[in-house]
Length: 213
Image (cartoon, rainbow, N blue to C red; front, top):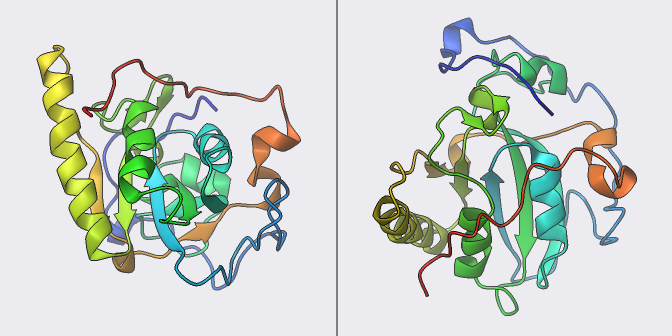
């Protein structure tokens, strides 16, 4: 997406104000998986929110993962209420582009969900991901259960040891409880974007740096 937002985090007092309601409509159904975009989802499902750069490619990776029930893209981790995509791109909302992943833990484990996350982006770049620059592209994990928190912290330490051994930098990924923030869905044209636009911008692929087995 080649966005160029702020490279330092905006403060709550200087963030854009936002609005009281969703600015643009969003479909109620995932156009690939056929699931409800906003729930309810089957009993036993788990939800995690992942920021790994441009959310188009992140969502595509996860909707193709067996055991994933639903995905959507939106904005999380910031201060502006009901932001638009354009506002988020300025870096003045504090949000990072985020993919919601709903999964069946009996089919795909939390560890596997996080392995995919670590192996398909560079978690050491701070407020950027490749050519996409700004706080809206920062790496982040927003967990919803204690098990996810433990898995996020543990896998971050494990993967960081692999990266450092290979001469890379330390991980900069934000790990925080989802309950501290609100997830705002992006507009409908951004949901399942690479299904709707098969030749669209992709910046994600397996990095070749394997997570330790």
